[in-house]
Image (cartoon, rainbow, N blue to C red; front, top):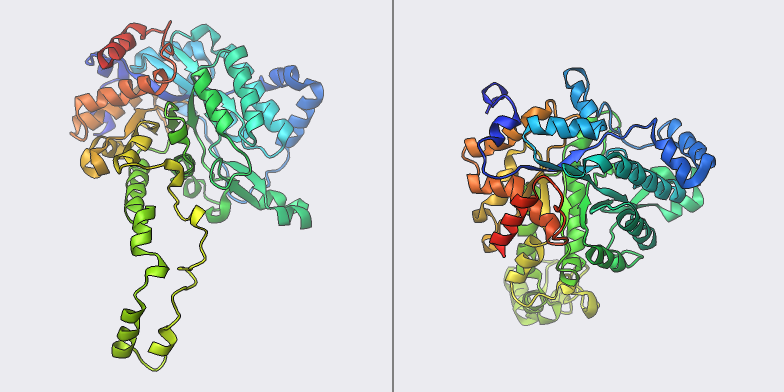
Length: 475
């Protein structure tokens, strides 16, 4: 659907709907000139000086970083909207948005800083600033707290502070951690920043993050991920082309986080945890979900022992085949005793052979239930592939993934904030999803993402009554 054929603004679409529209992923553009005020509260003038020195020097990144990320020109009003919550509240009405969950912009880079003091202090200062900034508009929107994840201890400390002291109801985490390669750090420390390793928070992690997930469940806060490893994960990056680096980056980062949580058994151990994987769309989620099922079908431990165990190789058959079809170097004599090969060894550790062991799968449908119930996939208005999440024909066990609408207002890819809802609704107008799917997309899924963990999430908001009716109907 072309822009010229769309309604004038989102309010025109909203007027035709019988349900609210929740923006599941708007962005605040934090003002750098204000951040030192809060950094000083966290660590004093010395911390402010360290922060400014760190961020004023030349970037030593291996790939092209973000450039010209903020709206300007005709979209300058959207830039102001992203900086001023009271203006956003007013402008959201014209955009057709009833309520918004707003995420950091500045913090996406702060939470992966490798300097421990700057990472932790920067997250806290941003949380203090955003809690203050959004305090007067809580009926219309709520910000998400920024949680550094380099260790479970720092994550829990900031989670406690953000929820208990500042009143945040949802949090944003880095879906991975970055460490310098230890060999490079020892032999050439000045190059350590160019040899960063991406570390999972579950698989092969040196830390146990279960206390953090348990704390999220205890406090009733959903977890969001905005990780895109385009700047530090630069093995496939370009030094000159930002678009080359940006395309697929959030899907890549979220897929790594989702895969780590799932195969690490986090959704098995914490079935009530709800995780939003934002800005990458839902197509990668469908691909991951189906790939996990298809891998399990062939690599569950029973299937592996039945079909892949080298100890069960029929050597008599193999020798006969060599006799019948071999040649002067593929001989029966060479085949005898060749039961264990470089990639099919007899000496595998039986305790680690089952890659799905953390999931404790009792029936095939567990694969679906441990994935679909926990993960939500943030889709922007112009993402046509959001539709695949709603089509059970594409997914094993007739699964529908929980796609959630997120405007991304505040970033470069929104050229007109008033058009995001009409653009999202074009999925219905073009027959890609149904009106019921759209209701789930912009309302139901954005409700359950948060209320499954905290039934009071929307209390005191402009959509409290509509949310209560939805939850009562689902009970």
